[in-house]
Each structure stands twice: as structure tokens, then as C-alpha cells.
Length: 124
Image: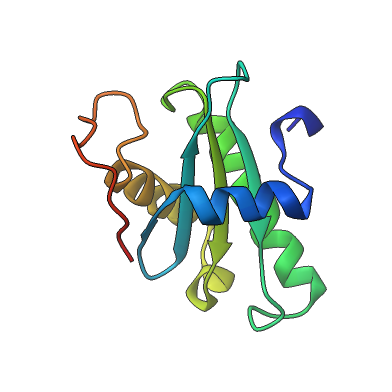
């Protein structure tokens, strides 16, 4: 995934946390912030040391990035996403990660074919 698609700066993460909406399931928490100044979505990843060692954390990040890459044609543009992995994500296969992310993104109403709720509400 191109570096233009990534959120790396702490200030950008904090902006999404502060101004975005969150949706979660057992494996992931996803913060979503709608943006109008960019042509594509961007993702930021947070995988804690509680998930596992460096190999495990990097594997989870690779699986999440690839899932977003495959789902890119289904994601409404433009959004900033911050994905926080939870412990169960460390034992999941690629298909399970992709399915779980689709579930969370569908709940957040950012996949094409889902209706946008009228109110900007936070769900945890």
C-alpha cells in the first residue's frame, strides 16, 4: 500500500480520535473521520504489545493493510481510518481479518451499499 494511503503523524491520529466516530467488534476498533481534502482514504494502524511479539504485530498490520487494499473498491471516499487491533486478531487468518474488518466498516456505514445514518454518533 502506497505511503500516501497511511496516517503516520501523531497529530493526524489525534485528529481522527478527537473528531471521528468509532465502531468496534471483538477483533478491531475502527475510528472513521470523513475528509474532503484528499482523493483517497488513508489508514493508520495501532497494534499494542499486548497482541504479541514484533513478528505477530507486524503480521496483523500486514493482514489489515492487505484487507483494506482488497476492499478499496468498496470503501466510500474519502475517509481517514485508524484501526486498533485487539488480542483475538493475533490468531486470525487473512480471510477472518478481512471478514471482521468488513463487518466493522459496514457498521460504520463506510462501505458502498450501506446507508449513512442521519446523525454522527459515537458507538463503542
